[in-house]
Amino acid sequence: MEWETVIGLEVHAQLMTWSKAFSGAATKYGAEPNTQACAVDIALPGVLPVFNKEAARMAVKFGLAIGAQINHRSVFARKNYFYPDLPKGYQISQYELPIVAQGRIAIDVDGVEKIIGITRAHLEEDAGKSLHEDFRGMTGIDLNRAGTPLLEIVSEPDMRSAKEAVAYLKKVHELVRYLEICDGNMQEGSFRCDANVSVRPRGQAKFGTRAELKNINSFRFVEKAIEFEIERQIDLIEGGGKVVQETRLYDSDKNVTRPMRSKEEAMDYRYFPDPDLPPLTITEDFVREVRATLPELPQAKRARFMQDYGLNAYDAGVLTSSREMADYYEQAVRESRADPKIAANWVAGELSAFLNRDNKDIAASPVSAVMLAQLLQRLADNTISGKIAKEVFEAMWNGDGDADAVIARKGLKQITDSGAIETAIDAIIAKNPRQLEQYRAGKETLFGYFVGQVMKATQGKANPQQVNELLRKKLGS
Ligand code: ADP
Ligand code: MG
Image (cartoon, rainbow, N blue to C red):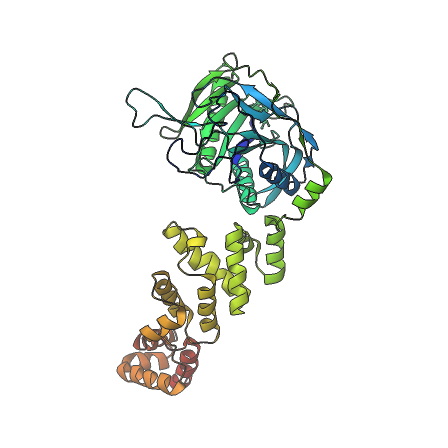
């Protein structure tokens, strides 16, 4: 039997507002526990929530970016359950009427484009955190995160493989960062995802029963968790069993998913409209205002990079993977007036490799766009060769100053004086009579040997093109 996988994702993106969704407390990550939780967040009796308009602005921005419908009237509802990190006893969310509905996001898997439907994106608040370390036999509660605004982005069950799910998740991640509505930090939990997974015999119209996988906090784990789950469900059905609808936790240490609660144990949240909050009204003017703040989106930027700079799809993809990287690249091209393709090779190649190696964000790169631009200029005006440029780049990375300073201090300036190069060539020829004889006898591969010797004698500084030309003349081939 051939099986088909069906996947739908629920993404929680923490919105980058300064204050919380319904209170004035700060949202900054990493503060001392309970120092950013006000009376509203700890649910003292008699307090009232006041909605943060910035959260609506960000949700609308997302909705516009995915071509969705913006609902002019949406409703906050109470989702009731008990948990120690939820002092009110309910989470404020949107249920029947979300702020954003029916959008679409294009993904690309192995060069094939596919549209993933977005069912809805709604506003809600985050809960606090339970702390299990440092509390012997007890649990600590930190309510700093309580009330932080979240955008929950729910996809249609449109994905058909773990690979597609990861591609989709990366697209959403890229988009929320482009829009500057979420920092996308998965380690700190500001971008999280639950994956709904089911399988069905290929050709069957009806979906199979799904399991919801929680607790996956990296792209790699999303792929692994889904792959494990697909195998588990197929093995179960082929062994005569039945998939039950349940919530499962992914254990990344053991690479397995295990049951958390079944449908029978599922909570009845008793949703109802929050009487403390009026329906959220979004006017046409507000939508227009937000639309005017939309940045150039990744897809458009990619197309423009290919068009304006003559880049291939791969390089354009790498260079537009974040707004910061794209800005860096464009600044380097602008300042250096260098060949955009050469600049692209440096940013997508050398710079990216160093950033990866040192696990640095481009914003924290020791080599700024202006510094790279100067290096590109020295390459273009033949002050240094490509090989020496890599040496200069590494020195700049290590804090040795800008390109001109490094070139001057280390004496790396390219030798373009043909007299000096000829002197070096003569010396090499004199030192290698046997090779010269063989070369003249027809062993042409020895030409490379002579080039290498001259480059070595000049510590790589001789202009390679001139070395080639002058050598040809001298060797008389
Ligand atoms: P809930 O609120 O209980 O999680 P939803 O109807 O909101 O349920 O669906 C949540 C997610 O599950 C959506 O992303 C949807 O696409 C996905 N989904 C629904 N049915 C299936 C299925 N049979 N297999 C895989 N994913 C599914
Ligand atoms: Mg769900």
